[in-house]
Length: 290
Image (cartoon, rainbow, N blue to C red; front, side, top):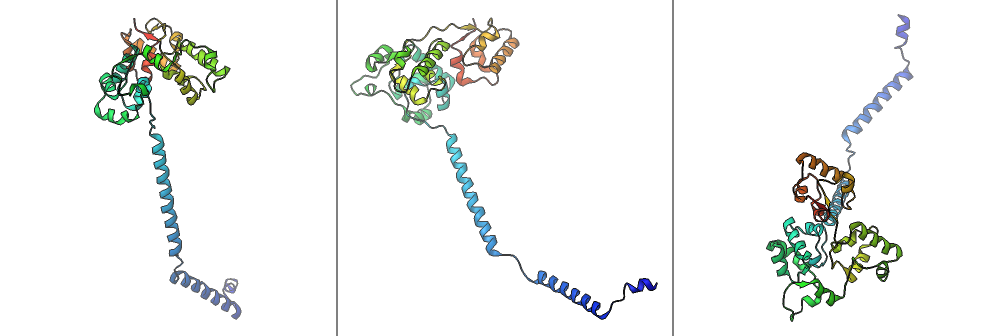
């Protein structure tokens, strides 16, 4: 018991130390309780930084949205492809009408004729027609508006048939050397001939500017005779050999064929889930259902 009491006995110096310690603790508690350590200046700076950051994020979002919108440059509507037409907002029937008109050797020479041929509505025509760029000789006031044949075009602008040019002809264009010329010829062979002018842009590693130069001198004036593949009798490997088909799409086509037993029309391919409608007209060049 004496031992226990000894632990609670303090001399005068110790009691004074304990008293001042308690007094110091109370003093510190009073400071934290009565003194405001918050800073309006700091909060104001933080708020300004947040607003500035938000404005910067909004600006970046606007730039990103603008970049996502396809930019339209002046173009000749005679050379609208299925992909280009899809980008412009044209329907499949409207694109097919244009391609059928061009396949007959005819050219569109005015905005009015474009609408009459394709059947596009007034609102779409108003949106895309400002970008139409026709050759100067078609906009002359002395020329009566009418379809011009490819022969007439060739005489006016002296373009050669791209399906008959040689590698040496291509090398005459600034920017095309032996390798690029061979690559264009090889791709033409793989396609069995160019059917659409814009197929030149598909040549691997061919710059768009150089491809545009090619089309200034050469164009499709004689459609190639493509050996079509019967989709109902062809093998998987034969269909896969088509330029515009990959393994997954070929597999989908064969799965669909197995479901329906026999494909009656190539148009049925549009019913396949995930089928690239923008490439349909190109793919249809190589397939037949009869």
